[in-house]
Amino acid sequence: MNTDRKILQKGILFMSIAMPLLFLGPVVIHSAFKNQNHPYYYVVLGVGIIVCLSAMLMMFLGLRKIMNSLFKKK
Image (tube, rainbow, N blue to C red):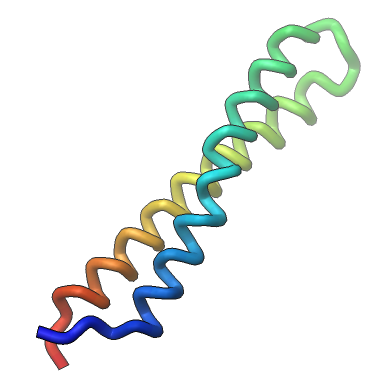
């Protein structure tokens, strides 16, 4: 059983992009909730939600690529 290294590297790249986003998203959302009277509240909250969703998407794509590199038959 051989591992496709190119696909594995892309999966690890996606996972490494997702790691900082996993921490950045909740920090931005928490910052938005602490400043609810600020005029940019909804903008900051929206950015935090988008960052969290992109982190989840990157994690999904990274795991999918890693699984494909390990178990996909050629």
